[in-house]
Structures are given as structure tokens and as C-alpha cells.
Image (cartoon, rainbow, N blue to C red; front, side, top):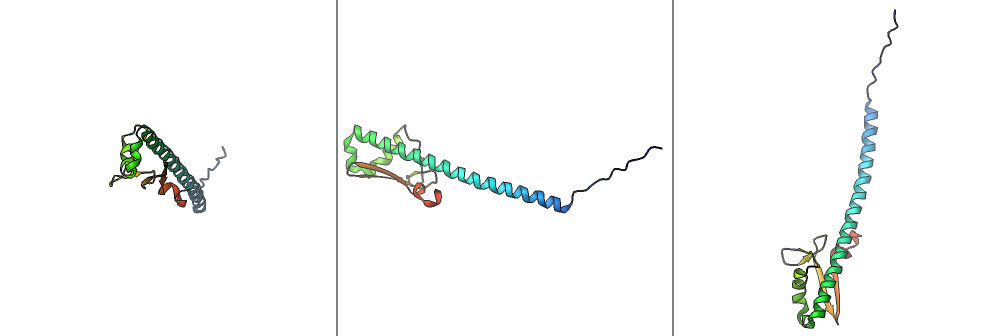
Length: 126
């Protein structure tokens, strides 16, 4: 007679399931933190590019028409919106928004154009 080898089925224990679930949770947490950091870097880069393009568009317009400086605060948004250099997102109040949906500000002081963004300068978005 042949020896019948008995096959023993081994069940997965509750402890093994908990260990696997804990490992999955740790890996998911690490990925989520890395993903959030990548999103922040992307928004910073997008806002940097927006600031540079707004500055370029305004400077080009001022070079072609120096009268723009007379009522700069009223005209800079129109200059930016009609410029093919800038693909800007516009808020409900007509303000130009950065990647964090916060308004971009543009000022002219003694012939120097400065473009800033509260979202870019916020220490929480570093």
C-alpha cells in the first residue's frame, strides 16, 4: 500500500494579516507624503514661470508704449490677459491667480516692475 501523504492546509493567521496590513499602511503613508511634496514643487514651478512671464509681458508693453506707466495699476492686468506669452487663470473678481488660486500682484515703482504672489511667498508652500 502506498503511503498517503497527508497534505496539511495551513491557514493564514490573524497576526500575519495584521502585519501585512501594517506594512501596506506604512508604504502608503510614505508615498502620500512624497506625492504631496511633488505637488508643492510643481505649484512652485508653475507660479515661478507665471511670474516671469507676467514680468516679461509687462516689460515688453512698457518698452513699446511708455505711456503705460502713467496708469500702470489699471492696465497691467489687461496687458497680461491679452499677451500670448501668458496663459493666466482669472478669478471671479478679475484677478490673475497663481497655482494656489491666490492673486498675483504687479507693481511699478520708479520704473521697476515687481511681480509677487502670496501663494509663492507663503512659508507653508515651501
